[in-house]
Image (cartoon, rainbow, N blue to C red; front, side, top):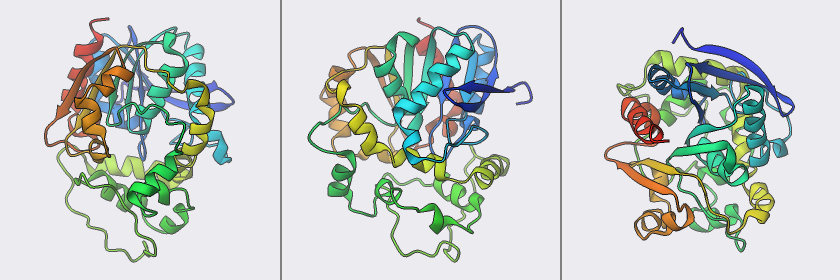
Length: 315
């Protein structure tokens, strides 16, 4: 880990913290929520040793990257703009792109907006979802899951409910969830007295890992990351010009069969029926990893690194 270099890059009006290691063709890693560049620590070390320049930023609002105060500064256009500026600052014309969780969504957007900057994409968890001009995302989610669905709850100032709770407890709970059921956050819970089920950590996660994440979120807070969810309807509005546009870069997709995103309505049929391939015509492979939960890039770090390498080495 001490071989990883940490730099700050000015891009798109913010200062972005970036972890980087290695030389060769560039791979850009995009993390999710509640995560950081650190989620890619294993892949950075592995793939840099195989001859790649590995780049993992803290996305805007996370870790040591600036967190603009306005909710509306967290749209996909802003975040992809940060990444284009990052590549320009590093004088990189094209990258291999890798995404997980919210990083997966940003990666899909990146490929829609600037496909010429992407050689190939390895995405995880969240399938590409074509824009439905008839239904706003939040209305669709509420209709299926109700107001206590986590994305709906995140529209509220839920970080105020978390105030006073040790970030390590929250993060430990989130990282160790193993249920494919839709995540619900009931209202009226006093998290200060909530009996967190602090089971022992799985083999792929250490106390040191939890403490690293917790230190950054205690320092920065969760608001920046939550603002991504608060822009989902705004993203939908801004994406109107891209209605009907598919993904035009080569893609490999990984998902764990215990990941709640794999059980969203219609997802498995979308993959099996060929809908995914229709919308992502250069989709080369879908890998469903048995017994693996949401945090696939940490839980199966070596396998994920191998999947990335096996795919991108062809280009």
